[in-house]
Length: 418
Ligand SMILES: NC(=O)c1ccc[n+]([C@@H]2O[C@H](COP(=O)([O-])OP(=O)(O)OC[C@H]3O[C@@H](n4cnc5c(N)ncnc54)[C@H](O)[C@@H]3O)[C@@H](O)[C@H]2O)c1
Image 1: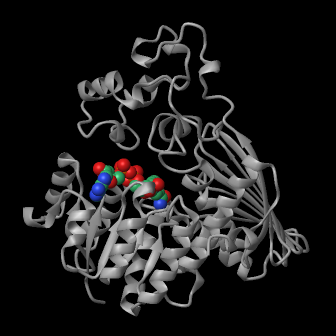
Image 2: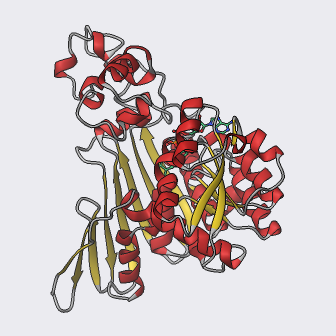
Image 3: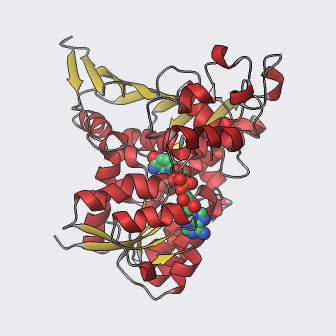
């Protein structure tokens, strides 16, 4: 296996924290040779970790992509609205690209990038990392082995977690759909993609309902301050920033609020930064609950519920087939298979992953490198940017349905963006 060299655009939480460690763990297989990151602290942190010379550190993706192609691969880990332009340019320059989800908040751009990768015969893989976890791979295998018979219906829940919603979708980077993208794309594109992966075929029709119900000004308790540090009600509030960020945990999500994770720096971040704001006094507009109904080309129906209000951050699903039922939860990575004929229940526990996203961050990197060795996306649908675009179309259509109240035909919906 040859060693693949890559440049990174955006050395934030994902670039530095999820894909950086892969290079550190597998120096014979993968190496970063350049980085583009405007934040000097983040840029230096990445350069130090990966021994990059100053001339290989750029202040923006624009500057890095002005240079001649410098290596085979590019990892694009900038924010949602900064995916399309650098990916387009990188593919045109000849890079193979691993692009963070979502592909783009604009439907046309998702399809255009899949088309461009195909034309240029380059690998373009979208970081739908859950497909590459041992947990969801095991579920897929059980379905493919026919142990559940013909799949008839799937019920899937994304339990976001009350604190995770507050961190990312009320105070944080994905709180406002105009700055990032709607919740069903920003967060639940993983779930649209998982449903497509597990069910197969394509999604024919979709409808969706949901709203931002709780994290709004009008629900602020009387007397609540604009910032948790100043709030007389802080001790009674489950969503208090002090409870979330001023604990012994200095890893994610605490390390998002400040590069310096000393208590003093964190208190300062809560005093002045976005993460110290009261959850009822933010500029958020993304939903805190949403339900989506789907009908697939193979006749399978599916329901998906995203909800902020859960204790744990997890996914739970039930797959119902003609020969048996499968129940699964990412809490402890437990899968239960209940065959109708024998009644012999099988309990499977997937061993805990040692790397991020249940091993998905590691798994997708391995697959990306394999695809590069093959030269472009293989025929295997697991890595296809067209499949990722289709699951993105499901998310766009669900959002359109949520807002318009209509049931959408996905093919018709997609046609208008071609
Ligand atoms: N696959 C997953 O499971 C998963 C999980 C979380 C986030 N994400 C996605 O990953 C992406 C990055 O998320 P994050 O949490 O790392 O965000 P982040 O804000 O921590 O990182 C983005 C980085 O891009 C940098 N940046 C800004 N302008 C730039 C420019 N012109 N050139 C180069 N870099 C620039 C920022 O300074 C920042 O460091 C987002 O699109 C997000 O939706 C994916």
